Length: 98
Image (cartoon, rainbow, N blue to C red; front, side):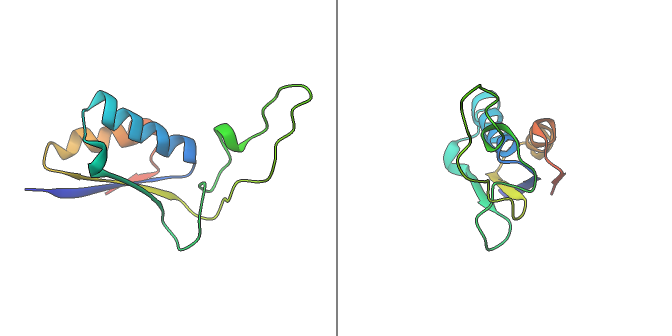
């Protein structure tokens, strides 16, 4: 039986890491994974991280600000072991998984 498992992430970096782990380490078909802002607005999460922060390189300035409006949802339509998918999302930094 297929079910949808959804994790909520506060940073774009954590959401991307979750997708990478699900696809590469757990062999989830990328077509079964969706990533979207939880709310109606575009969002890079609720906290800056990774590419959304300053580069730290001398002479390099960051252009613009991340769209920190709401959490990012990563959903997986899966028929396999839900506990494996939930654990992978939590390990990647999900603030909640359902």
